[in-house]
Image 1 (cartoon, rainbow, N blue to C red):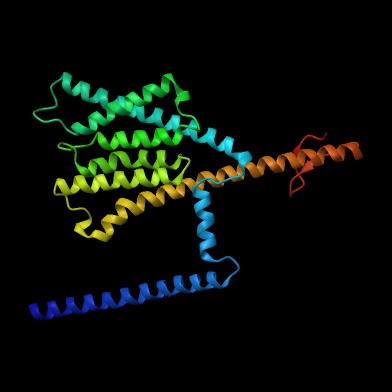
Image 2: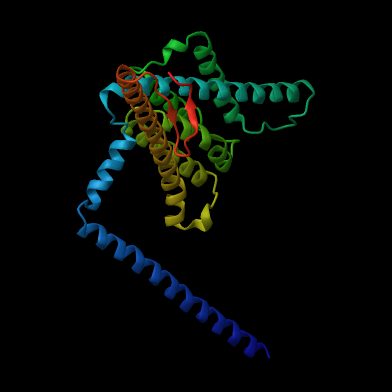
Length: 279
């Protein structure tokens, strides 16, 4: 009976392997056919990738650059304010634990507490001097704060590598999305991800069952994809806003021209409903 059960399990595994190979082969054929179709079209793939890279690098019309820079600086200050208030909550919690003797013999996330204090200090600087973040200093501020956050976690004794990854991942993505140049966030993100892997190795933590490919993808691929998606989203919003402003100006010009020729001008939508009062 045991041999028959083992034989059935082996057959089930073989069937699953066969199904896996068939399904993945079909999907790969679909991707390959789409790639060949793109290569035969008027827009070759590397031209598409080049346009994606320009979008991620925020290479927009010079007339929109000023508005985009102000948006980045304003959003960076807001994210820093949120980070500083969260840091304040963390510090208050630790103060209460110290006051009531709840820490015990060991400090939890000791190095992360030091990083929290640095975050509070930087947030306080922006509360008093928000003009520190300007279009000319945005990337320098990002690189400096990223390097400080990395140095603050050297060496790591009490803080688990998984805690570092979970507690810093979101803010790393937000700040990287708002930088001006691609090389800034690419270098700093690679340094932060390398540090997490180094801490995990020092602490003997096996991530993703020790397989190198999934570990590299989660540590480097996922942050890069999230940052690129965020930057593309900001770029598309800016371009959409610029298009709406241009259409509004064109509509105003057409309305002014029609008023010269006619006594009244009304604006209606596709259902012939009035969108604005007659002029």
